Length: 457
Ligand SMILES: NC(=O)c1ccc[n+]([C@@H]2O[C@H](COP(=O)([O-])OP(=O)(O)OC[C@H]3O[C@@H](n4cnc5c(N)ncnc54)[C@H](O)[C@@H]3O)[C@@H](O)[C@H]2O)c1
Image (cartoon, rainbow, N blue to C red; front, side, top):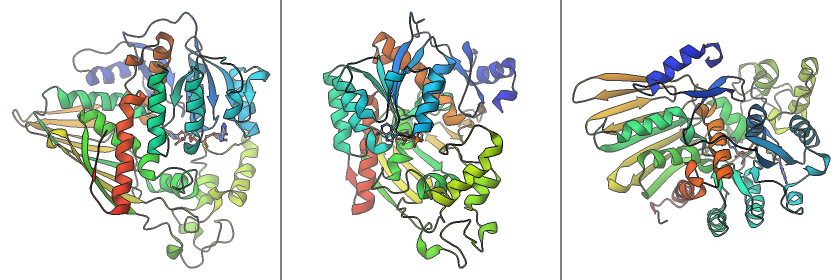
């Protein structure tokens, strides 16, 4: 675990990562699990005279990831307002960031009834509530940190791009993998001659069966019509990282996949509406809500629990009795595919095969890059490069943290970009990010209409 390593261990690891020279680091930071990550010193970053000020719309799980950055680096980011309809979240966020009473709002619309009072807006509302606050923010001259997906509609994505350009504002899309050292290094290796000419790539997103049940069967993203199809909700990161690493435009795409397992017809005999309703197979079901949330106390980041540990069990039980998180996974109104494959043709006839799989015991994206003079095989914590010319095998290693450490690195670059009004400090501006969303919409059309879709930007 990163928090058990000394600074020297880290420098050693990252020194290997960087090749011959170790990167200098500005400071220690922790991700939302409390694990230590290192933010590399970016020579383009300037010391700020005053912090960038921001208003958070949506103080849920992601709003708190970026809020956490402000708490760790108060000289860089100051959260001066919040819009959040759930009272306990609004209250906790207000307290954490010392937000003045007059800058607390129930809903994002209220923020924009006031004249502009900060540099930027952080949009971490649910998927179907990105477009409204983003367009309002751009109209009023705010810069934006926009959670992915940009929007569940292609037209809305394009509208946001157009308005950002017209009003000359910065919109950073939270394609956080672009900032993860693992993918940064992988991209470098793909383009520095190590594998010759890139021929093809295989990429897999193993969602992990419990993560699937939490987010896409029971949780916020269980219904594609109410939120976003899973190819965007989960895998816009993957389409984006493929396109970004190859640095080529996508020409054609085809997709297959459906919801095969989490359906009423597969409900075992003896199962009940809720896991705690006397379900006869609860003890042996891998998706038992009682085991996942109550016994093991895992996957709780969307639960609002009391701070006192001794009251948390009771609160979790309430969720199991009253929320979707307590329901049988075979009895939800979910429709997100649990297996989804996409074939992509990029410029220069490079092919990519992407699989999104719910039924794995593990997480961590697996990538294999095939080149004329070598190949690379990686799992997001390490990759192995083999040079066909010399037979030499080299390993690159990194201890994993959430999103490979990308979350706060994105926040750091975004703050700098806003402070200096320089979008070039970001690798995931809306201009750079929109094509991978268009790929996602095209994949979904291909899957539903059983056609190969041509991509035109
Ligand atoms: N970049 C990533 O890797 C990543 C990871 C997870 C989620 N996400 C995206 O981030 C966004 C938020 O996800 P989350 O996991 O934090 O969900 P969440 O449910 O924890 O947080 C969303 C918050 O928005 C609030 N909200 C709802 N309506 C609102 C309104 N009208 N005005 C203001 N706030 C409102 C909700 O009450 C909730 O607290 C989603 O779009 C999601 O897809 C991105």
